[in-house]
Amino acid sequence: MPLNFHTIKKDFPIFTTHKKLVYLDNAATTQKPSAVINALAHHYRTANANIKRGIYGLSEDATEAYEEARWKVAQFCGTPCARQIIFTKNTTEAINLVAHSFTRAHCKRGDEILLTVMEHHSNIVPWQMIAKERGLKLRFVNITKTGELDMRDLKSKITSRTKLCAVTHVSNVLGTINPIAELVTLLHARGIPVLVDGAQAIGHIPVHVEKLGCDFYVFSGHKMFAPTGIGALYIHQKYLETLPPFQSGGDMVLSVTERGATFQDAPERFEAGTPPIEAAVALGVAADYISKLGVMNIRQHEITLTAYALRKLARIPGITLFGPKKAQQKTGVISFAFNTIHPHDLASLLDEKNIAIRAGHHCAMPLHRSLGVTASARASFSIYNTKKDVDALCAALVTITDALHI
Image (cartoon, rainbow, N blue to C red):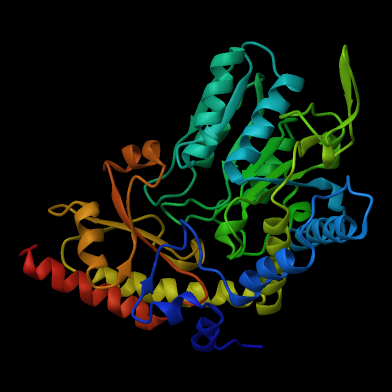
C-alpha cells in the first residue's frame, strides 16, 4: 500500500526536538525511529548480560535476542542461512576482515585486486595497506562522463592475476546504482570473486545477496536507521569455513593451550570478544521497520523526490550537478558545486537556515579528482524527507547565491 511519508516523520523523535531541522545528510547517517531507540532501552532494562558464556537465564535471553537479530538481518538481505551473517562494527571493519582473511588464504605476491575510482576510502585504503604488506597490485576501473562505471574499461583491467573485485553497490557521491548482478556474472565467468560495498544501498533499494550472486556483501547499520557501532558482512557458503580469522581473542576459540588455539566455525570465528549486543538487537528492529514500510515503497519515494530535486536544482544559476541525471539510475544522493563558493562555506550558510547537508570530498578523493574538483556539496534523502525539504534547500541556495552575486 502507498505510504504517507508526511506521517512517517513522526516516527523519528529528533524532528520533534528540532522542529525546524531539514536533515539532508542521510548518506552519512540516518536518524533513528522510536522503534529502534525503544529497542535499545528495552534490551538494557530487560536482557542486559553477556552472551553465550553465561549459564543463567538472563545471559540466555541476551544470546537469544542477539541470534534472533542475526536471523532478521539474514532474511533482510536475502539469505536463508543466518550463519552467513557476521556482525561487525561497520562497513569499514567488514571490508578489512575480508581484505586480510581473503588475501591470506587466496593471494600471493604479484596478484591483483580490482577496484573502481568511485569507491569510498573504506574500500580503497584497506586494500592499499594489504597490497603493500603482501606485494599485491591494485587496478582501478574508471567512470564514464555520466558518472557510471566504464564497463569497457573494467573488462580491460581484468587479467589472469585478478583475484578479487571490490565494488560499491551505490556511489556515496554520485548516487549511481552499479549493475552488480551483471558485474558478478562477468567476473565469476573468469573465476573472480566479488565483494560489494552496500553501505549506500541497504535500506534504499532491494538487496538480495543470493540473487546478486556476490561472494561478500557489507553494510553499516547506522545508514539504515540502526545505531552506530554495528554492521554486517555476508559471506558466501563457498568461503564461510575456509577463511582464517581476522581478529582473535575470546569466544572465537574452541580450545587454547600454551602452544596454540583452535577456532570455532562461522560466524563465531569472525566475532572475537564481546560484541555490541544491544546494537545488533536494534539492527534487527531497524530491518523489521524497513521491511514493514516496504523497500520498494521507499525506493519509489526516493525516485520521486530525487527527480523533483534534480529538476529544481538544475534551474539554479551557476550550479554543477554530478552523476546520473535520471532518478531511476541513482539513489537519493545528489552532489553539486558552485565555482565561486566552497562547499564548506555553502554548508555553513545552509546550517544557519537549519538545513543540514554534507560538504567536502565525502571520503572519495579519487572520484573527486576524476570529476575535476576537490570537493562537493551533497544532499541525500531518506523516508522522512519530502518535497518541502527540497524546496527549502533550493530556496536557500538561491538566496545565498543571489547575496554573493553568483
